[in-house]
Image (cartoon, rainbow, N blue to C red):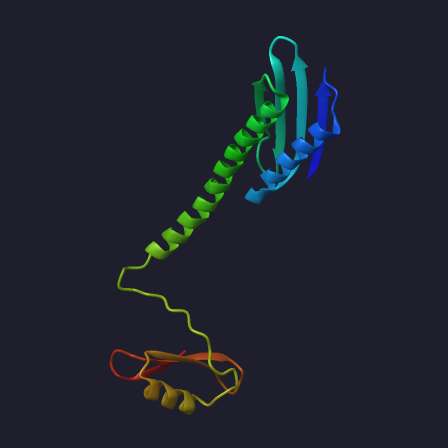
Length: 166
């Protein structure tokens, strides 16, 4: 992430630059793709100091935050806190949207339907008769296996107590 600090009517000291950089580093915790940050610090004799942060995010408009205070460090801190709030909201919006998609996908099934992920116990090819014996022994509804032609097959118990092969 690029950072540029500009001082208008203000001399930028190493302490000011370090304070801005430490505040900028705290913005990375939201895992958003921040391309660049431009910080403009200015001084006005009557109004005090102002800090302006322009944060460029990938796939989003630029976020601009302006903050004024009588103390330069306070203006920087307030602007950083406002930037954190905006970035946190954007991060929460993205993560909540993903969670809602997962909920919608799981709500498509009835409450009685439950999907239980299963892993194949054996990857070695077996005969169809062996698979039928395995299905009968376990009492399950279906059994997935690799046949002798190295094809994935499913043998299942039908409602008429006969067996089907897919």
